[in-house]
Length: 155
Figure 1 (cartoon, rainbow, N blue to C red):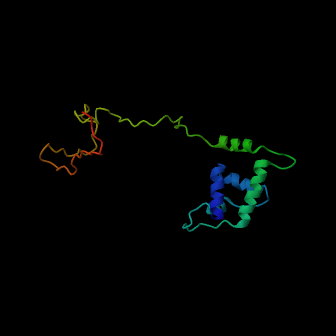
Figure 2: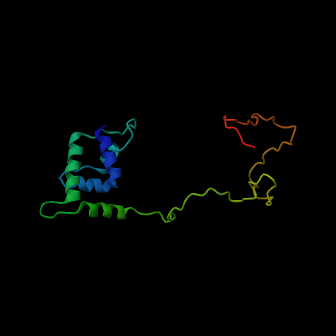
């Protein structure tokens, strides 16, 4: 595992934004630009990818200790700091509490096999599928197979 991987995983686990990581590094008097920090999070095959050195990771971890625990003179509760980070994440307006996913067709009559759909102009822009009459169309590729798994049926 490289230093870049460790930095990425800490960023995700602690829900940190780039500007928060820069502030954490400034707690230990280590200055880095946002573009340099972004280069650590790129894919390894990207042309602007940069290896995260030991010094950067060491300073980030030391700053993270101060950020979460505080100093001796001004101690903090790490759970409060993490809760504050979680509260700062903007919620999407469209996303509500996600109910159980229920896959239901929008037009239930459209997907019934025994009758045609009641709406004739619902698929105006879509090409129609070819319908083959029974008997002279595509041949059946798969036959119906009855599996007898060794269980004897009682009659």
